[in-house]
Length: 600
View: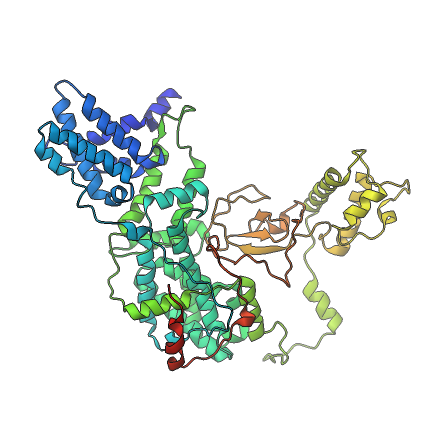
C-alpha cells in the first residue's frame, strides 16, 4: 500500500518542489504541465496564502550551494503564477501582500533584477468577474411577452445567444468550480448560479415564444425558426446554447403539441432529430464528446456535462491517500486538472462575431422571465387541450368502439412482475408496522389502523384486513390484503408515488438500484410527495414506500418554488402567475415603448 501511495501520491511540499524543478537555470519552463497543474489545483488542498507562505519560508531558509538556484526558481515560479493566474492576486489581497513581502526581501538583499520580475502592481482589476447583474422581480401588472425577435434572422439570434453566454462563461473562475463540487450545488456561488440561470432562461423563453402564438401554424413557424437557430449554433460550435435550445423545444409543454407538429416539414423534423441525437446523454454524452473533441478554434462546451464530470471524479476518488491528509491523490488531481484546465483555456478564445449592444440588452430583458414549469404547461394545455372538441378524422378510420372498451384499452397495463410486487408489498408492510405499531406488539390495533387509514386511500374497514376477527391485524393479514387488492388497484397500493421528470444539480443516486443518476437535463424522476429519486427505467420497479412530507404539494396548486432546469432559484425570486401575463402579438412600436421599463 505504501509503494502504491508513493507512486500515485505526493505531499504538497513535494509538488511544490516538483514545480520549482519545472524551470531551468534561465527561468524557462521545462515542465509546463506540472507547474500549471500545481498553481491551478493547489487551492483544492491548501489556501493560496499557505502556498505563498511555503515559498517565502523556503526562500528565507534555503542554504548551501543550491541557494542561489532555488531562489531564482522561486522568483520565476511566482512570476509565472502572476502571469497565468492574475485574477487570484487581484481578488485575494492577503496573497498579494505576501508576494509584496517576497519582493521586498529580494530588494533588500540587492537582487533588484529578480525583484523587478515580481510585479503585481500591473495586475488588472478582475472585480468585474465577480459582479452579477441582479434580475428584477417581475411586476404584478400584466406584462407583454417580447416578440421583437420575430424579425431577426436565425443566424443573428444564434450569434447574440453565443455572445451573451460566452460573456457570462468568462466570469467563471477556479474557485467557482471548486465551490460547486464541494457543495454539490450553487450555494454561495453567484457567478455559476447566474450562468446556469441564463441557460435555463433561454430554454424557458423559447417555450414562451412558441406558446405565445395562438394558432398551430404560427407555433410551427416559431419551432422551425428555433431549429434553424440550433443549426447555426452547431455551426458556431456553441454546444451549450444548443443544449438550451433543444431543452426548450423538448420540454413537455412543447413536445405534446401534436397539432402544431403536424405543420412542421418532415425534413425539418429530421434535422431536429439529428441535433437531438448529438446531445443525447446516451453513452455519457459520447456523441457530443466526440464532436466537441474534433472542434478547432472557438468552441463552447455544454458546461453541465463537464460539471457532472467534476462531481463524478470527486465522488469516485478521495482527495488524500492517507488518514492524516498529507498525501495528495495525484490520480484525482490530474483528472480534475484536465477538466478544469480545458474549461479555462476555452475562455481565452472568443467567438468570431460582433454583437449589437442594443440587441444584447434587449435579449437579456426578454430572457428575464419568472415562470414555473407548471405555469407553462397550463398555458400549453390552453393552446392544445388534451381532448380536442373536434377530433381529427384518420385517412383509414377503424370501426368505432364502445366508450367502455376504449377506456379499458387505454387503461390496461402489462402484468407486473410477481417478485417485484411481493418485494414492494413486503417493504410496505414492514414500513407500516415500523411507523404505526406504536406499542410494538407486532400487530395493528383498531386505534392504530385509524391513523394508517389517513395515509392509505384504499383502506376502508378494519374488518377487511382482520381476517380471523381477533381485533388486531398481523403482518401476514396486511400482506395478504395488499396482495389481493393489488390486482384491483394495478399495484398502486399504499403510499402512491407521484413521479415527475426532473434535473439534478448535485450527486444523486437511484433509490432502487443505488446507481448514480447520470446526465445533465431531466435525467431522473423524483416523487413530488416524498422526494425519492430513481432512474427512468427503475421507476416501475421501485419498491420503496412513499412517506409524504408534512406539507403536501397539490397538482392544482403548484409548489411555490420556481422550477429550474438545472439550478437553485435566484434569491428573492417572486411568484408570478401566467394568469397575470398577457400574451399578445406585439407590434414593434409598442415594444420599444415598454421593454426598457426593466433594467438589469
